[in-house]
Image (cartoon, rainbow, N blue to C red; front, side, top):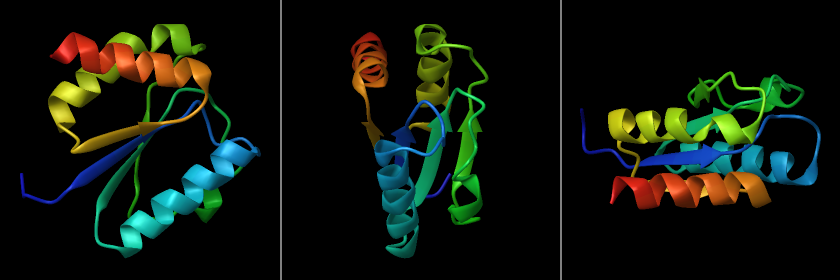
Length: 104
């Protein structure tokens, strides 16, 4: 693995919403700045996927609810070792915090 900075963004899905649009913009800008970006989702919503840079790695956890994403997120973090993990919305923020706490 190279020493490139990996920024992981954790969001329920890519449905049409304000947080989702913001994360798509952030992801695309981070790619332009030369970062590696992993966009982690768990729902099947993909309305905004077509405007993502093709350089963004899409990590789909394929779960029905955020409640079932804790262990897959921990596995992702162990395997991919992202430099930073950004999340948005209440439940995904809590899951991200719990995942980080369990890794320490």
